[in-house]
Length: 505
Image: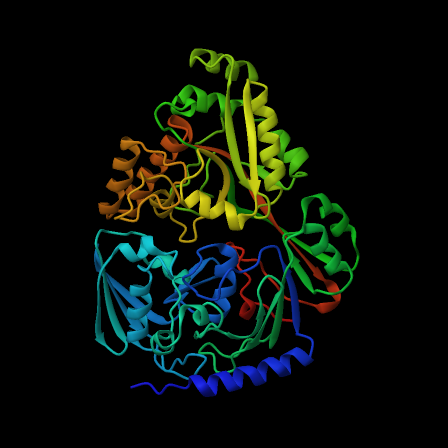
């Protein structure tokens, strides 16, 4: 039985906080979005998962674009419903407690509690979790989930004993994981500091102390870099890209992002967007090339779909509908909306590159075919809960699939909403189409992965071209800037997470 070391852990943590506060961190980073909570299941937003990946581990981890062993050394998948994991021995949590199968069972069962988890769709998919011995666990799902293993790098494992002994508020403030770093101080919305876990199972990370400063305003973030207050920044503003690139003291790393920006549309009966001709007209009225050139300053790539080329379901044959104002007006006329209509477009103003300006551009384009767009632009802290509560029929959002599988995304974003089965949790417009649902559900029982990928490609075409549930816009660019003098060795991850054990000097 584990020995509880919470009191000792608190004393050590306070001492470490005091020591860290007196000295500058080895690496100071400005990020474009802050974490919401230290509860590893409390937010499925990338900004939160990125931070949690430093304090916690999953059964698997994503390294260099490949899924590799983490807290599970290996696993077996004997049938479509069964996943057997052989756990790593000798791993301890930050408080000294030993990691074992009880922690895995507890962590996965916890996912089903909406009060502490935004991963309830995963939680609802689980049937049984059986502990074979201290280091062997068998998980059975209710239905086949082809991407189950690929999702495990972001299902973080918690210490059962200490989590049960603490209240929800404390769990959300003080993370106790097995990760490469320990939290030393967090002032929500201002900064957080972390120190290397010298007993980390993979070996102590090379960067010993890290300070993370969330600075949502892009020009302020850039100013912090130029002034030397931070060593590197994420999310270099596109309007300042050329200026940053020209600065001899800075290195710029620029790579195509996996994240697609798109417009979600509802098809509720009685609304104008229930008519496919209206949805197609809206698509063809938007000049995406101009958005890339003028709004994104060339730092984006137009796309005809949401999945990127690395994601199962990406369809290389899809082409964007052309920008054609005359055809868009004709479609509006055929649908009986020659005089247009009024609609509200919701969007965040602090989550994606130029998100509010993209929404403004879309509104101007749609005005040319008679659609009066009322913009409802707001902070992401307000916007995203509203999407999950289905308060919008038309909104701008971004997405990349962390499991590299569009089947997972479609069950989350486009399947008809089904609370009990955990389907459509991010289908904020409540778009519903029986043909799409049937095609998606058919993929769960396909054993041949090439065949399954083909069905997902067909579903991709159905979503983007035939049904136009979404209007895809572009893939973002991931842009980072670093001080040359700091000699930071950094390779961006495909998921944009900042995992500091992967960084060195």
